[in-house]
Length: 226
Image 1 (cartoon, rainbow, N blue to C red):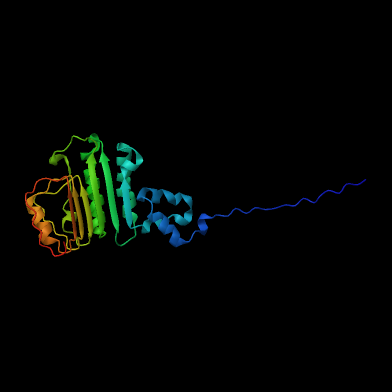
Image 2: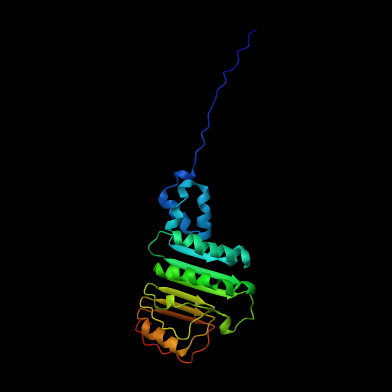
């Protein structure tokens, strides 16, 4: 008896790169949902993604998200400011949100880097600016130990929404935000003169939120938008 062998059927399974098949518009939308660091890291998924992150105009950096505030995340932020932000190709920045908690030993040495990132975003005509910069020491409340906002954002004509927490406003600055519609100030010292400037130099202001503040004694609102 002769047994017939079943013919061997060879099949080839072609590997499909599904990532490359994602529409470009969807890739950009995905990257918009990530923090700037994660969007930059996502470029390793595919060569197609390599430069898409540079068009991101929504920049969010939160070092508490990584579970620590030590030298690792501080140096990561320095790398972001020096190596990542300058490569962004967008003409304007929609939102820049910075939540940075320092260990006390890392504070003063890296203030200039925060200033640099803020200057970059203001020059890119940021519309929504959120700054929350503080030390991880709950009893540190003296005003001279708070982060001082540099002069750059005080007269920005592009800022529409501003949220400023745990920051110090320079004594001799003039606040003048012609496009500002929403302002939130929290955990800071603000003088009467600055309150007057906000009321008189922000003609578009519609929303003013003050939390845990001190320093001024009078709030006189005349804007018809309130």
